[in-house]
Length: 243
Image (cartoon, rainbow, N blue to C red):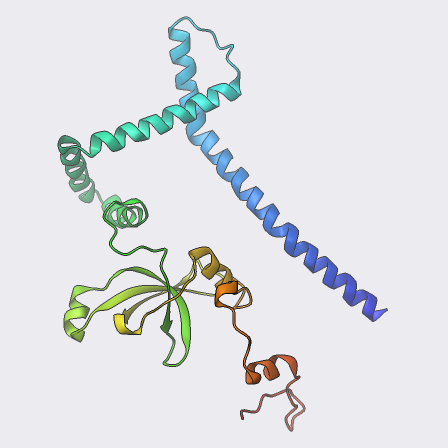
């Protein structure tokens, strides 16, 4: 009876592990689509309907087609903005508005940091790509953590140390959205042949899901620690004795 219960529990959690990621992904995509539909597409669609009505065309065009017309208009508008603001006059206008926004209370304290983040992901002058996965000695020597190169170090810190340091973001397990920003000597950084998604899977799984190209057989000590139950100490509690 107990064995059957354990088997059912194992099968249930295995099925949950398959269904839950798929369900959460679909739910997130549906939420994103609903958010864009209610905040952007509906307003653009209303403008499209008004423009068609002003030209004598009624509203007989299906709503699905109007939505795609709205999406196309938004994409074209973004492209035109990118083209115009890349020019001499457009850059001057952007600089003027950014200086003006910097003087607005609260807004001026938030906007510069949001702009730095967006420029990091979408800017054309990125010198260090976030896609590079590395390993660094953290939290102490001979203990290593996966990290992502995020940029150059602070100039003051570089000058004080007398050698180059590079900023590395070390994600936390199992929630890689949080972590630590560390300034690491360039000589201590070890590049790893892994993509960002592969590294994130490794972090989320606690080191279980390792890419095949980086997977190695566990050492004899690690294998014994995993396979053999730990011996009990004098109090009856399991413990691991170092060799």
